[in-house]
Amino acid sequence: MKQYTFLVVVIALAVLSGCNPSREKSVKTITSLETRLFAPAAMGFDIVKADSLLSAYESFMKHFPEDSLTMKITFKAANLSMNMGDGTKAIELFDKFIEKYPDNPKAAVSMFFKAYIYENQIKNLDKAKEIYLQFIEKYPGGDFTNDARIALKNLGKSPEQMVREFDEQRKADSIRVADSLTALKPVKHQKKKK
Image (cartoon, rainbow, N blue to C red):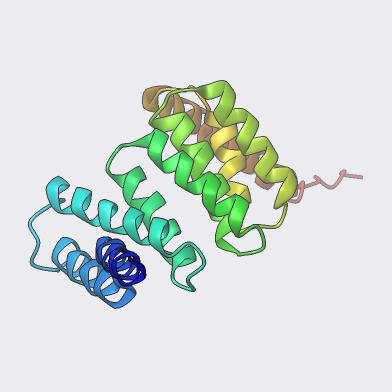
C-alpha cells in the first residue's frame, strides 16, 4: 500500500509541475512574441499579437512573482495594456508596479501614466487631477513634473480651445516684447535754442 501511495504522489507532482511553464520557456515565448509584435517590418499594431504577449506577461508574473525579470515585465505589461486601450487593466498593472517597486525610477512614470490614462482613456478628469497633483507633490523635480503641470492646466479642454489659448498667449507675449523694446529706445531730446 505504501508503494501505491508513493506512486500516486510522484504522479501528482509530475502532473502539477507539468502545468507550470518553465522560466526559460516563458522567457523564450515572451522574447519571440515581442520580436514579432515590435518588428520593424510589422505593419501597424497587431492586436492579436499584443493580446498574446500580454497573456505571456501575465503568466510569467503569476508563475514567477519574485523573479528578477518580473519588475521589467510588469512595467511592459502595463504599457502594453495602455497602448491597447485597456485603461482599467493598465492602471491595475501600474498600481501593482508602484506598490511592489516604489523605489524604482519607473514608479514615478507609472504614476504619471495612471493620471494620463484617467484623463485620456477613462475620461475621469477628477481622478486624473487628483493623481497629477499627487505626482507633482511626490516628484517635484521629476522628468514628467512639468508635463503634469501642463496637463493640469489643460485638463478638460478641447484641442481647439488649447490652440485658441496658445494663440492668445502668443499675441500677448508679442505685445509685451514690443512694449519692452519701445521702453528701451533712447528718447531724443531737442536742444533749446538760445
